Image (tube, rainbow, N blue to C red):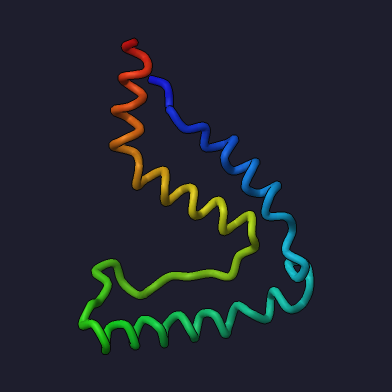
Length: 96
């Protein structure tokens, strides 16, 4: 079966267009991790308090990432989300 979306090509183009994060290799990048973990936990509590919604998958997980990492994570999410559609479309493409 043919995948109607070239995920590798999409990632290469997106990474090239996004460019490099200027602080990715600096001390600023590493110093963000502890704050980000704390803010993620706070945000989860605020969302739960306001909406009553709680994760059934455990505590929120988040990480500091660069542009390329963000692109990769988002494409992976879209790939999972669109899988039922892309599988059907791929079957149609190969069956002619």
